[in-house]
Image (cartoon, rainbow, N blue to C red):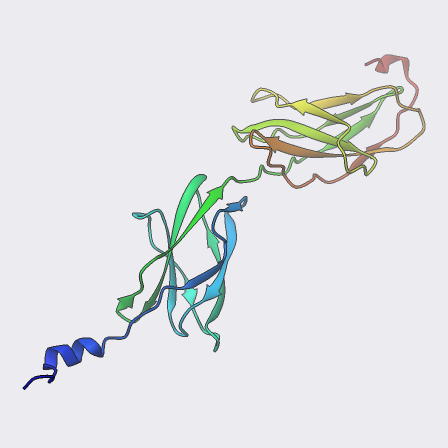
Length: 208
């Protein structure tokens, strides 16, 4: 009879449709500077949010949507850098949504310099720190006495050497404090190192 649905058609019409998740973060074209970042947005309650990097990337389950309003906020981890497309889908039972594609620029920040030390000499201070062994670290910015602008930049040293700076023409008996920040070729900066201080003192054997 015309207009009557077949059992197959009825079964197909009953299949639940899973909507693609709405991703509010990261935004399209966002810059990601750390391996772990937050994915937030909205989907259907009970849906599993899945992420893959690139069309053929490995599936990563971020978690289940449990909020009544469908909102979610999950940490995600990415291990590669570059201009990438991240694919997000929502899976509900045996059904998975079409992908929501978010283009991002991934460029990790350098690690923070460690083992900072300062030693007072006669009218100067020797500042040393451990080398950040990332290939794209090109220099270190050195900050003195809490200033927000670096007083000097020091080029990256070869592997196996210890980066250092000699701060000259100082006043003996005064305390000077220092912090160091690594900078990569893209201009990304690390967290600021811990602060160390030193007091220059007179001593003829301490010529720079």
